[in-house]
Amino acid sequence: MAQYAILIYAHDSAHRPDATPEDTATSDAHAEELTSSGALVMAYALTPRDMATSIRADAITDGPFIDSKEVIAGFYVIEAPDLDAAIAIARTNPVVRDGGGVEIRPVHGGGFVQRDSGPKRADG
Picture 1 (cartoon, rainbow, N blue to C red):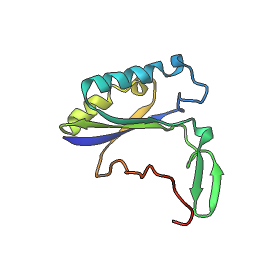
Picture 2 (cartoon, rainbow, N blue to C red):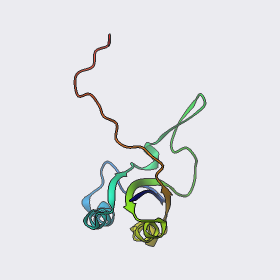
Picture 3 (cartoon, rainbow, N blue to C red):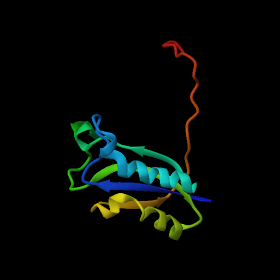
Picture 4 (cartoon, rainbow, N blue to C red):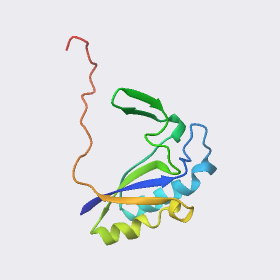
């Protein structure tokens, strides 16, 4: 089955370090629905825009890469049989009802990186 990345665009992320369960309830309920449906592969919420650091050439700045009304607040990957099914799933994201939006992109490739759990030594 094809995988699609859903990028969530909103005014900012609800997942502040001091966020309460009430602050994230809508997002959490949506994630539970996607998990129950079997469509959700992975999901990550991002922290608010003021916690971002951006790099362009040799310049490092505080804040998101560009100053815009909306930022990427999080993303998740779903499995769907085709783009139409992915669109139907993405439309259920609560940010769409709350004035934000989502972007849907087919996943070309990738996956989790296997890491050696042993201690690392500076000399190799």
